[in-house]
Length: 216
Image (cartoon, rainbow, N blue to C red):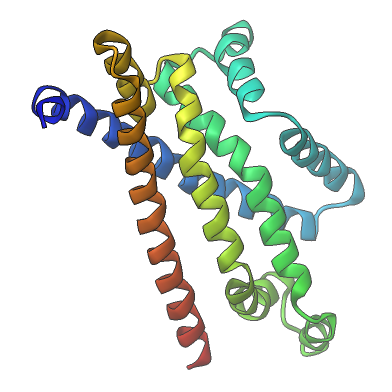
């Protein structure tokens, strides 16, 4: 209890920054990933090849390496961001590759016969995506989306390495100052357990709601 009385505001501040980084990265990552998946449906093979290269590079390199490249290498290319902005952008870019693959697999899961039927009826490609493919794929990809969102919530702990004052950084600092590593680590585990647990519950609710909405 003494630990919470003395350091409670700092822990809550760190938790808030963790949630902020996570939410910002998820929103940006989903938008970028969805755009990449849609562009792949329209683009020629050269553009698709570039996008595949983007996805494969991000999926086959550690997030920590990508974070370092953006934080330390960005200023050499005129991209000077502070630690917090770098963390959100890096996490969003990292997640976008996985979100793009989730959306791409969702589009491909819709039977091709339905797309051909839409073409025969004169429905535009964009309307086919919005009215036929998107509603069906949402039910299929919702579990994968929720899983990736949970993964990104845990990856926020890596941002402490570039001095983002999120939960891991704050608790690590408190543990070093007071030599209470076990207690702070347990608090960190509990906080992430709560964060992931709430996300999972919301994901389950969203999955049910999406299914019911599309059955109407």
